[in-house]
Every structure is written in structure tokens, then in C-alpha cells.
Image (cartoon, rainbow over all chains, first blue to last red; front, side, top):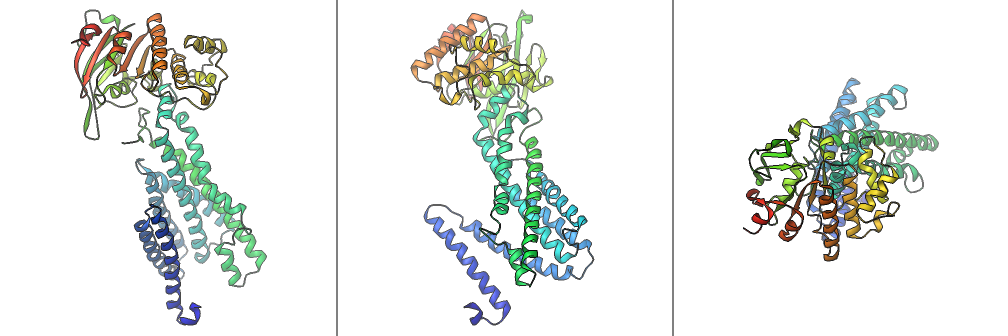
Length: 262
Length: 233
């Protein structure tokens, strides 16, 4: 219907964005009726996301004409931004930004590097940046989930953790059940995405490839490739993140920093 | 117990010196100094929020003092590996916080942390000591509050601590369980001449269990000495 009303592509896409945002806000308003207040957070996230993606789109136009290293630079900036975003889920844990950034850099960065070297990801900026950003974004989400779960579990089980410490346990022993739970739960979305691929959803990348005329079988297999890379990048990120964040929730004298009411 | 270095320093097993801790802008423990001799039972009493549990946490070094320190057998406890220190200063918390699994697994946890395997015979002996003979294979999820607290005591004793720190061990229990645990502690602590620090808000309990007492108010020591004198002052 919108296509008939708006012939200018720019106008059309802006109106489409408006309707999509309105749909998200309706859900937020429904949640408000149940006492869940996400209005400002969602609104700010959407405005911020829109501005960011327009900015990146504009930068991409410039980069496409630039040397290849600019792609790497853009991905590095994305990694830092992803580290800052997911570290917000670890409120009260000192050094969460540093740990998150390094974990995403290692998790997503190593998968991007190896897969580009193998030729699985095309080193052309038009391919490297979009595929790399997908890996970074998913690594960020996984990292945020892991830190959020770990923070919640440690706060809820500080008594058990300190009981273990009081019995002479090492810090890693005292939090190991919660580290494991954080790692496992953070990977649920990535694993479910692979598991339900093609049955529950046809991802955007594959849909885009089909629309641009790529053979369906090639598009389908490459979508699997991307999701498998996302799983690898997310898993590595969560593994590194939970490993290094563990040391940050204790002092050098093996005292639990993260405690309710502190 | 004494506020100052005493005439018989050899028997002093634990000494706090000007122990102070503040958190969130509030002074929790304020310049606390006392000595504890071997086989002595000291009760720390005071109203809620007076810093009793905070002081016990400092002794176990679950929290770091802002100033002052603790000497364990003459050694500044900051020079002792925290894990070794915590095994020597065995803490029983207000709530038992048992780990998922069986009673036996909970008892074996502490010794396993330094590579020691608690034998089944030792496990059974400890359980007998806390009145839970035959409970080794029971799942901790099926224990009553009183039974769980007994397991927590046995679990701490499994580490053979030099000093037993008890943080309101009966406060979360009903009246019947409270007296059972108290009798059990009296048997263990007094029977074995264990050195013990017990935190309680219950003066009568302090009088029944301890020979000396220290009264805290707003983190400061306001009285200390023989229980009979201090608690009736």
C-alpha cells in the first residue's frame, strides 16, 4: 500500500521506518499497562539506532571507494562500541567495558580474521563489513546476556559464594556454577537460531541474496555459513568474557565485590 | 579476653588491633581491639545494626578492614593466604547456605579445596557429633531449617578450624530448633575446648554459651569482660 502512496524511495523508506518504530512503541505501551516501563529506553534505543545506521550507511558509501584497511578500521570501531554497549549489562562489575571489548575483539575478531583468510568471507569491504558487523553484533548480544545473567546470579547467590569462600574455596570454584549457567544461557539465542533456520525464520541476509537474484541453494548454504560463524564468534566471546569477568568480581584478597545493597 | 596486650601473651590466638571498616559512608566497625585466648568462647552482643556480623566478616576476611588488622597466632592476617586463613577461622553463617547435593558432599567440600579427601568414617563421626547420624546420603533440599544448620556446623568443623566463628547461628530457627542447636554448640565448643567467637543479639544465649563478652554499639566496643559482669552491667 505504501508503495502506491510514496513514489520517492527516500520518502517511502522513512515512512516504512516510522511504521516499524510505531509497532515497537505499541508493544512498549502495552507493557506499560502491565507496569513494565521501557518507554524511554526503547525510544532512545530506536532513535540512536536509526541515527547510527544512517551514519554508518553514509560512511560505507565513502569506504567502498577507499582502501581495504578502512574496512578493518570500521570493524574495530564497531567492536569498541559493542564492548561499551554490552558492558552496561554488568553494572557494578569493575572493568566490564575492558573485558567486554577484549572478549568481543577476540571472539568476533578471530572468527572474522580466520574466515576472511580462508576466503569464507570476501575481503572486499562490501562483504567484510556487513558480515563482520553481524558477527560483532551477535557477539555483543551474547556478551550482554552472559554478563547480565552472571551479575544476577552472583547477586542472588552471594551467600552461597561466600559460604564456599569461607570454607577455603578458590574464587573460581565458588562461582563456577554461575559462570557455567551464564555461558550456557548466553548461547541459547545463537543455538536456537541455527536450530530453527529455515523452519521458523528466513534470515535477512538470505532474503536479501534471494531478492538480488542469487541462486536459492547458494543463498541458503551461505546463510548457514553466517549463522555458524555467529555461533562460533558468540561462543568464543562468552567463553572469554565469563572467564575474565570472574577475576573482576573479587578483590585480590578473594573477597566478593558484587553484593546486594553495595 | 582483654582490650590490651595481656600478661600471658603466649595463649593469645587472635588479636584485633583498631579494626575499622566503613561502607557506603557508614562506619560499620569502629576501632575494635580485643584479644582472644585459646579455648576461650567470646560472645559479641549488641542490637541490630551494631556491627556484630560486620566484625565477624572482618575476622574471616570476607571484607577488608579500612584500617587496623587482625593477628592470628601472632601473624598479621594480611600475610596469610586468604584460603588458609578462612580454613583456620571457620565461619558458620546466619543462614546455612548449603550447596546442592547430599549432606556428605557438603561435608567433603572444605577438605577437598586443599586436596584432602574426607573419609566416610570422618563424615559419619562429624554427622554423629551434630546429631545427624545416617544423614550422609540425604539430599540437602529435604532438610529442615534446624537440620540444615547442623550440617552447616559439621561442614565447617570438617575443615578442623582453629577458631569457630558463629554468626547468629540460631536466629533463623524456630524456638525448638534454636535450643537444639544451642545445646549442640555447647557440647561441641565447650566439650572440645574449641576457641569460638559467637555473634548473637540474645544476651541470655550469650550468657549460656560464652565465658566472656564484648558489647558493640554503632560499631564501637562499649563494654567487654566476663559475661556475667558485662551482660548484667
